[in-house]
Image 1: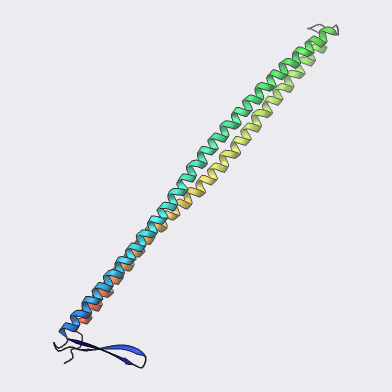
Image 2: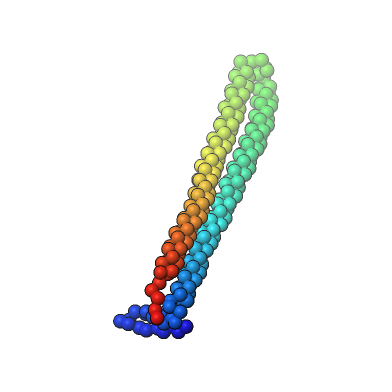
Length: 201
């Protein structure tokens, strides 16, 4: 078999001089077409799988971030609660000392424990402490609520982004399979056409 390459008007054209009447030439064309088509389809599927693997990896990182976001929020809320408890404890101790000083001062001034003035001072101190304790609890609750809401929003955003990555990965595989199937069908058509390749003598 002899294969001669001619160049006509700047375009490469292969003119096949086949003493077998074109059968060997057709076989070569079909074989080359099938190999090229199969390799192209394999590349398309492999690229799609690589894209999915990358997307799944990115999604796993986002899942990890979401978990860390939740753990951080829980830790921060625990810290807020502990700080509030400590602040409340200190306030109680300070109030107890203040009551003691007020009682001693009243006694030194000649006011009895049952006097109206002493009772009013004690009641005012208790009321002030109660208000301060309520303020401590309120501030702690608001801080914890803010931390929780931020964590929920961040978790949702991270998980939603992870789901989008996974969906994109699945879509990439689907598109890759469709493209590979199209390539194989086109290859099959080309191979079938090559079987009717004009025979040269």
